[in-house]
Image (tube, rainbow, N blue to C red; front, side, top):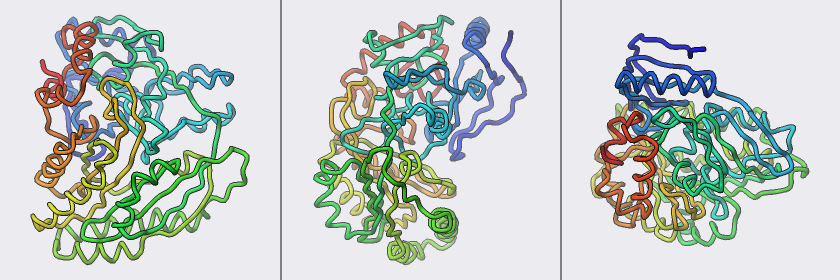
Length: 439
């Protein structure tokens, strides 16, 4: 049986519109055997292969030069063991589709980021994370995966295989991942407290609050002295829920967080002088709310305003200094930045290309409205982060190459050796991987 294939050279774009591709053909395999066939056929023709999930990476990590492998038809729950809390998901399964698959099992993903549009394989392969110093990124939940390597061989890695730590955050450079096995947590709920606070107080207390709370993060609108904090506390699954009322969610997330914010961003493009007063007005309208709901409904939010994003990982203790340095450079350059920055923290891990490898990590994410050029601003944020030992999020925009990245990742040499083993002929190469990993 062959996969669904099209040779129409239509243009593919990622969610942000920052990356496009015109592959020779698009393949939509429906099984592992069909993935093997796709890889072997492309290899015989001398074509390069790139798997793509939801296209939610802002970098060109999933840009397909020749054959794009669309994982849309590889979705769903393949196996579940409620006793151990382990489940195996097909690689193309979207994050937002996972909670319904788990509801009858009494299990939840231990942590999530604030966007759930990605595929599970794309999220773990690029090092997607949430927040909480006792909780690593999504990739730390992986206890096994199956992929088709550059020779067309099916490989299954488990915790007994030392290579698993290298293959999880694999950037699509090692093969086409077909399934992922996760270690889940017993179902739980979250009590969320969101409120504006003086920025200076939040910076002074940030590290301690990250250590004392289950999940703590904040947003900061440039040109203001206010932080919008979010504290999530983990509670047993059987506590009474007090979710947001439908009307309140509609007002907060649809009308204000997306509708009014989109209008403010468009206004900032045409009248940059208004960005500062609009941001200050927005800071005065920041939500004050408390609610208790299923974990995935609290972790994630709706993001309808398109944007570009760069994100950097630094030692958690450095994050307050990073905010102050970014604030200073925005003032120095006289930029008008309408989009808030996001500050989070996560646990250290031992995954070779994880941004949290070997250190407790703080994250700063900078955004720019998709109709604005992010170049100079993102470059300045990069320089600030690098001064604090920053590592770029693989799925977000950055311009570093292997020469710099090799000094930031102690296990980069091991990863490159694993790449030589699994993809010796660079079947899965593209321009982005050639820059960050070499030819």
